[in-house]
Each structure stands twice: as structure tokens, then as C-alpha cells.
Length: 296
Figure 1 (cartoon, rainbow, N blue to C red):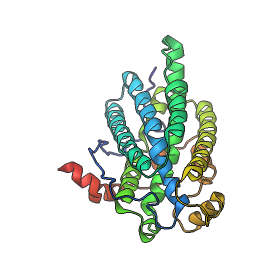
Figure 2 (figure 1 turned 180 degrees about the vertical axis):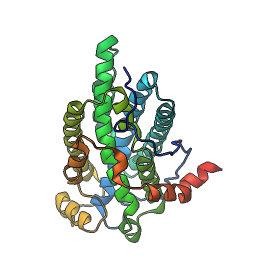
Figure 3 (figure 1 turned 60 degrees about the horizontal axis):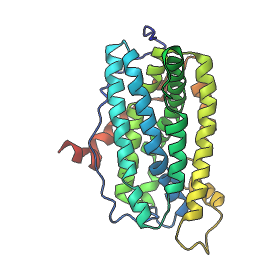
Figure 4 (figure 1 turned 60 degrees about the vertical axis):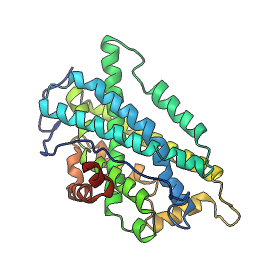
């Protein structure tokens, strides 16, 4: 099933992808860990709910693809990608108990994500040609989603407002560490898809589906979390207003990024390496408290 790598389907950047065995302690993290910003805090909480199931599904799909990857270096990067995504899932999942302690019931939203990633976007036990085609479809869909995580990752690495706003340092390190690794492995899933298939029509279709899906999931989960936030809401502004204000303060990228950053991905000759240097990602991973702790 694999195609021979070409200049347009696999660009080597000479970077080793490897998981980091990080850990985080949430004991003193408040529910609104960005002070006086309920929506901004809940916006980033979505990562703790969406990421575990989504990243497990991505890691599982790339694991299935390993048997078809004939390029030795791409195979090595894909293995590293699987390890990083698995660690992301575990790290964000560990925050669930903290949300429960703060009185946020997340079981319903987690069940919804479980349904989509474990019942819908799974291998379904297919065989032969059907198995290969469905694998290609899932790789294309997840490659599109990885494009947006890389966009958010770079935004996070460029961001100074969250630290200036007093975001809890443990949460900020989790977000920046995760986002730095998203930038670090931004090429891998796209290259795996190009190596196994590379159909532009499939990339176009799944890019549109992925962008709409992310927007719906993110806004739907934001609404759910704000509705079930146990803090007194007497003086709260409606959450869409809070979202606009937090975006203007640069505390979040704003959901419009799924529209504004889609056209570059849909260019026929697009490759993630065009998104710019990954210097900030490498620099942060060299100084992240969690990443440094993993080395010891």
C-alpha cells in the first residue's frame, strides 16, 4: 500500500521524535487557574477532555499504519509520534480527578468522546481492501486535526499573555509542553498519510470535515463546561462574550482559527514544514519543568 517517498510527500527535517515521561501534580490547582477568567480556564480544560480520547485514537491509527511504512526514518518518527501522543493522553487524563474534586461532572462529555473515538473512528475489524481504505481515511482526518493542533501549538509558544495573567504555572507548563511537542511532530502524521496514500481529494474532504468537527466539539464542550461550572454565576457575562473578551486579551486563540488556518492546509502542495521553524518548540522542551523532570 505504501508509496515511494517524494520531495512533496516526505521532507526530512533531521529531528528525532521521542516521548518524554512527564508527570504533573494538580493538588493546588484551582478550578479557574487563569485568575478571574472562567471561560478561558474552561476553554483550556477542553484539552483535558478531548485530548485523551482523540490522541489515543490517533496513536492507535498510526500504530496500525506502521506495518505499511517502508521508509525506515519515517517509521522511526511514527513510533516516536505514537509514544508522544500516548503521553499526552495520560497527562491530560490525570486532570479529570481534579475537575471532579472541584465539582465539575465530566462523565457525560467524556462518554460522548468515547463514542466517537472508540465506536465511530475505529478500525471496525475490517479486512483487506476495506481495512486499507478506512485506514487511509482516518489518517487523512487525523492529519487535518494535527494541522490545527500545530497551529494552536505555535500560538501557545508565542503567547506571553497567559503567564502575565497569572495562569497557574503547573497548568501553563502542561499546555506549553504539549503544544511544543505538537509543533515538534507536526510533520509526522501528514507524512505517514502521504506515504500510504496522498490523495488530494481525500485530504480536501477530510480537512473540511476535521475543521467543522473541531469547531463543533470545542464550542459544544465549552457550553457544557460553563453550564456545569459550580462557581457562582451571578455576575458572569454570557460565555460567548467572555470568549470574545478573552480572545482580545490573547488568553486563547479564538475558535476562528479553524477557518483562517484551513486554506493553507488545503493547498495541493502544502507541507507542515512550511509553517516556519520549530525553534521555540525545541527551546521550550529544553527548559520545561516537566520535561526536565522526565530526564531525571
